[in-house]
Amino acid sequence: MRRECVYWVGVAALWIGLPALPATGWAQLAPSPDAPPVSTAPAPPPDETPEETLKVQVNLVDLFFTVRDKSGDIVPHLTPKECAVTEDKAPQTFKSFTSETNEPLTLGILLDTSYSQTRLLPMEQQAGSQFLQQVLRKQDEAFLASFDVNVDLLQDFTNSPHMLSRAMDKAQINTAGGNGSGLPGLGGGPVPISNPKGTVLYDAIYESATRKLDQQTGRKALIILTDGEDEGSDHKIREAIGAAEDSNVIVYIILLVDRASYWQQGEGYFGYGPAKQISDETGGRLIDVGNNGAKLQAAFEEIEAELRTQYVASYTPTNAKEDGTFRHIGLECHGDNGDNLKVQVRKGYYAPTPEN
Image 1 (cartoon, rainbow, N blue to C red):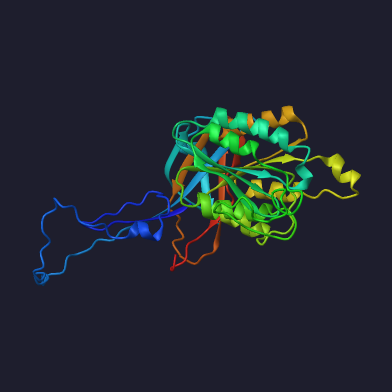
Image 2: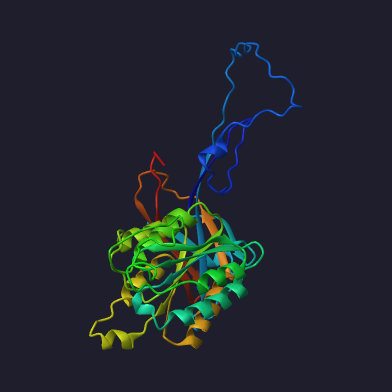
């Protein structure tokens, strides 16, 4: 994510991801009985010499990435000398470069509860609960949402695997246009979207990135269990990818496809390509498990290993224009023998605009 830091002499304000408060929460509190009396005397005239203000702007682009060798094994312990970053093919200079294993992790788990997942949901719930039990540490947190004709928040941010597992067990296949009840939007939550039909995968990604993960810091990832099919989303695939890139969210898609059900219904399956595009461009990965429970468990283990063996780097772009254009990121790393390594990193980001 592109960051802007502003420093003022004598005054500093710090805002760290506090939850939104109702309007009444901002009301002025009554003074304490023990507080000193408030003076009603007119304020003294201002100093004729205006206080000088120093304003320094620093723009940084953060990169969270995983490196693998030709055999597919994760490569740890690389240094900046073994990697090079470009933006729109222009070389950039690393400001920081570390291998992170203990930085807090923020996750969003998205369950596809459309009719096509009927046979697969119980497997998803079991494997997903086990994954959360294994991956969440004290400093981590996660939320859980389902999507079919709309997106429903099943459990807001929590560090409790038990609460997430309980919410996951309550997920239901949409059989009548909305959570099995025929009422789109039932289940509420702060991420409501309604469509008359379909599977709003792109909306789920867009809303999760912009409403839930954008204000979070550190490592952020969406893990989506779906067949990759989208129908009825208000947002296009490019908008979903852009929202994830702009929020620096890595998207992992575990492709769960009961292909036999597609053939039995005389329908074609077209979810693989879009799912791979989303995961590749956001620096994540597509793992196709079909309807195999053992492969699903292995997929979760692979994702856990990647999230716990990531590199974190940053650079100040040489192009400082605030024009809202898309900036392409290129990141290459090589091993001790000079061989090129496979790097999973987001493909770019949108530059800010003056109003932002």
